[in-house]
Length: 243
Ligand code: 9D3
Image 1: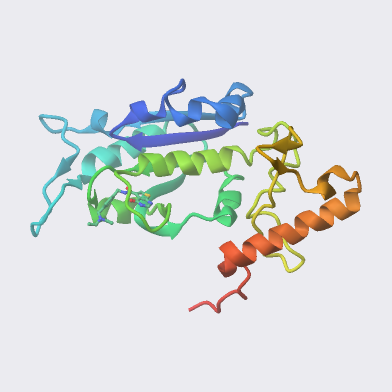
Image 2: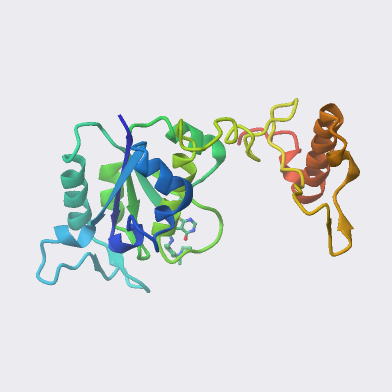
């Protein structure tokens, strides 16, 4: 059975199946057309039981911004989870979450069903987080306007790991960040070239035209190490002892 994502958001239009949604093109669109994945965006607002279908309110204790109320989200989760018999892995996109890594993507890519919660406010009322007990995932240390783009990034990364999602089955194994050195740590990718052989006075490294696949593989490996050393030395550092 195919993977099912449900997204809870106050901006469901961001997840449209056709362009301009980022998921309406490229690999996610192909995977969906092939029946490998489906996604359904649901408006949390449809579940608000107050007069103006409000989903947020001012924070107790004062301060800027709005806080997402418990009731609409709680009822939205219950309704959406009942639409399919498979249990969901609940995920909240939040700056307070664990940073998304390829390792986490690969762990999630084997789940049958995920419920992604994207907030667009200062945050959710802590009590509904406690009750829902979702995994909390962050995209990294910068500020987004809301969790929706985070949800799409996560979905994209997961979808391309599904068996059959890529044209050639080995290409996701070759990714930067799943490419393993002899010591099992990931390396950055090497440079790539295509036609023409000469462009604006710049030529392609001779070795790539040599036909010697052994030496080409060795050259690529060296470039990967060199780039990783200069751009991402952190990837070559010995793993830090856990706190
Ligand atoms: C004043 C504190 N702000 C936190 C840095 C408030 C705040 C800003 C932006 C709370 C939420 C948001 C919206 N961001 C997300 O929902 C979000 C996010 C992000 O901002 N950065 C990285 N990953 C993520 S996942 C969801």
